[in-house]
Image (tube, rainbow, N blue to C red; front, top):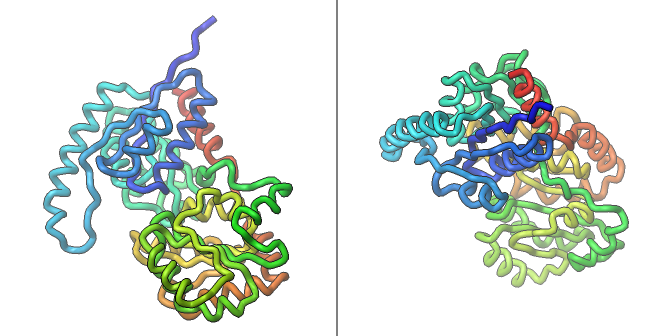
Amino acid sequence: MKEAKKYRIIIGGGGTGGHIFPAISIANALSEMLNDASFLFVGARGKIEMEKVPEAGYEIFGLPIAGFQRKISIRNISFFFKLVRSMMLSAKLVRKFKPDLAIGVGGYASGPIVRAAARRGIPVVLQEQNSYAGVTNRLLGKSATKICVAYEGMEKYFPRDKIVLTGNPVRQDLVMPPGEFEKSMSHFGLNPGQKVILLIGGSLGARTLNESIMANLDMIRESGFQWIWQCGKYYHSAAEESLGKSGVTNIMLFPFIRSMNRAFQVADVIISRAGAGTISELCIVGKPVILVPSPNVAEDHQTSNAKSLTDHGAAVMVADRDASKELVPAAIRLAGDEEGEGKLSKNIEKLALPDAAKEIAGEVIKILDRK
């Protein structure tokens, strides 16, 4: 009996959790589906992947690559030196590791290693998380064998025949069993008889979302709803002080929520930024959502992400510049509108793609089998 081949796979990219956590999910799915495959992650030195990938049990090599500053900056001088050095190191890594396939998940660390693999004729799979394709993936698209996307209409960035709609890999424990509802309410110290509005701004926080809450505490007090406010560690002291002075008692404040699945379970309305990974999670959770896209991202891609939902009647969008006046009133109106909530929930659930990691792994295995 012929022994199964032990494949070697390079996964390049990172810079943010939005890139690296899907990459780890893809590696985990491939590990389950392949016999004793070897993985080498390639990321950027000093970034989150250098910590999170080893924690997940995988080897990683850090390149000295850094992002290009879109504004005039002296740091762009060193960018080109770091890029050349990263390309040389990537070529050496590919020769030494001898991968059967390379996966690029986006972020500037993805470019040099995926390009080095493609130049040696190694099949390349790209994963594009956003509805507005990143610069790195757009440049690599022509040399890719397959491009896994999370949104329809991506043929404006990539060759149509290479695209497959898979969705973005997400955490597998997002949805709690219905029997856990009372325990989840108790976990946050909430009254089961009142509706809950959940605001999540990420682990570091989102200034606009936090300022919108602090500017409307009187309205929140009179809303008749309970609020869970994840403000982020950078804003926790200011938020705590603001709450203390206001005397508002219907807000549960947290710098970071570890049991996000329980928070999603108790929420009747969710307020969030519009990162690609977050949106993929919210589609699976299936709750009414108000999105406030961050303006501080490349090519304003969060607005494109949010529009992909609002165009399907699956979310409400509030512009960052209008949030201080419009966000809290919009959340209160939605929480009081049973029919509106139902329509949003029904429409956002239609967009959910819960098996993305397995779908992407399946595309990888098809290519390996053909090879």
